[in-house]
Length: 97
Image 1 (cartoon, rainbow, N blue to C red):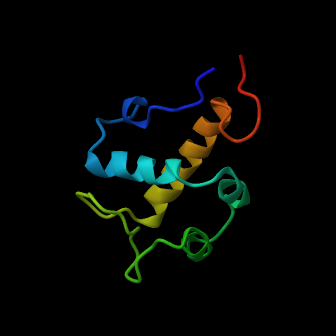
Image 2: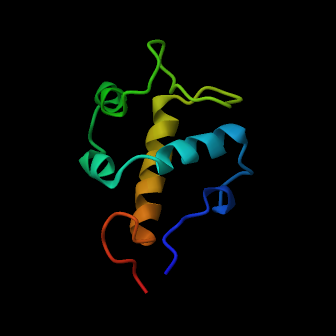
C-alpha cells in the first residue's frame, strides 16, 4: 500500500488556498514521534511552544502564505492531519483495510 498522502488533493470544506497547502506540507514534515507527543488538551501557549515555529506576535511562521495562521486554525489542521496519518498508516500503525 502506498502510504504517501497527496495533501493537495485531500477533500477540503472550501477550496484550499496557497496557505492551506503550505500548512499541510509543513505538517507532513513533522515526525511521527513529534506528533505522538501532541495532546489536544494543551493550552494555546503550550501548543506554540511544542511546535516551536510560531512568531512572537502569534501566527505560525511559514513561507508562501497569503494569510496568517493563528493557533486555532493550526490546531484544527494538526488534528485533521494526525487523523489522516492514522487512517493511512503513517503513524507507525497498520492502515485499516
